[in-house]
Amino acid sequence: MRATLIAFGLLTALLLGGCSSTPIAGDGHPLPVETLSKGLHSGIDAPRLSVVRDGEAWQALWQAHHAMRQPAPPLPEIDFTRDMVIVAFMGQRPSGGYHITVSEVMEHRGAVLVRMVSRTPPSDGIATQALTQPFHLVRVPRLDQRVVFSLIEE
Image (cartoon, rainbow, N blue to C red; front, side, top):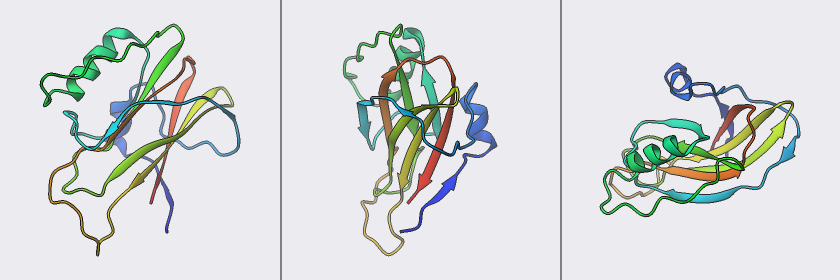
């Protein structure tokens, strides 16, 4: 198994707004993580990493995420005075076998570090031949510090 650290390119950095894609080394204070939604099919088909800190942005993201699903599942209630939502969309992939997971969120040196793991199907493996859009949405305690995303590809 080969693990390499990847920073998303300039396009992703532009999509992140106020977020950074530079990894931080070292240990920090882990935050509790609650999965809100994880799966392989989304109405969001471009890579996207972001933090949602208000109800209006959360509702817009949820609607875009479920644009292809009618009726959309109910919007999970989030108290944005206490919590925030970390979202990781891998973008559209040509087959099954792709996954993205928010593996850890921690407070570290005045920033929030979000560690993610992405998996791709082996080149000699068998995967479903259907378009997928892997994603993971998690709730964590609200911190108003900058967010740094770190992605390990397996």
